[in-house]
Image 1 (cartoon, rainbow, N blue to C red):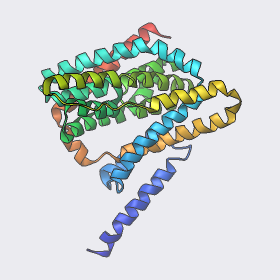
Image 2 (cartoon, rainbow, N blue to C red):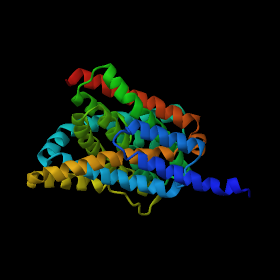
Image 3 (cartoon, rainbow, N blue to C red):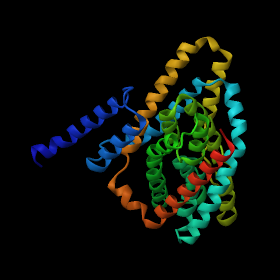
Image 4 (cartoon, rainbow, N blue to C red):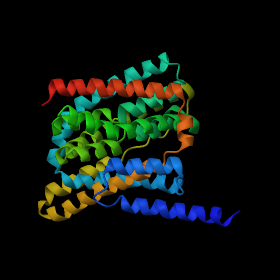
Length: 318
């Protein structure tokens, strides 16, 4: 082993930590953080692959809870109630089209179901919940996660650009992003770059959509028990309850506004770090694992969901 090869991992780790620290600066946008992380992951590799993946999951949940301090509970409930029908229709449409595309393209059935569920509900979180319920192996879940991850990254750049091109209002963009973007991280990231009002509404609508993970995973587990027998565990998105609790604190103790503002600001910047970590998780191995058919299914389904939801938003909202 040469001296340069021995110290290379050290400077890569130092570079990774430096870029992660820079992503906490207010001048760094969510899109830039994701892009820098992806370039790092695809070129030099992620020297902290396992720890950063775990950190991104927990940091995302903590940031979502922090964003709860930016809204009072009555406002959250109002947006949530109005979004139940919208999210339910969007999920039903995505599942129906996704499963049909999977059969048409002859995608492996479990992979096709996971891509459909991830697109319909909550990206990686839905896949993580549905995978065990469907008895999916690590390789199958990896393919579905990689497919959704790639499109999730693209959405962070495309949605704000299209929103500005079509001059969508804050409300219109919030509804569209919350219904059509896969993961909570990119929904919040895209909405944050569009405006404060869009961020607040999109976060609540996305969490309303994410709640459908539970009945969907329970349904998949019930179906599998009927087919194979045995018990299946279902993951519950507990952080959504903490988001509601944070908004309840705002409603009960309105005098803490300066503290709440600081928590929301920290959550927004923490989300930028989260997106850097998510981007750094992308690797050439991930790209090779996707395969053509699941990727085609994911792209066509995403375009169908994004197009249909945008048409609905333009027709029925202002």
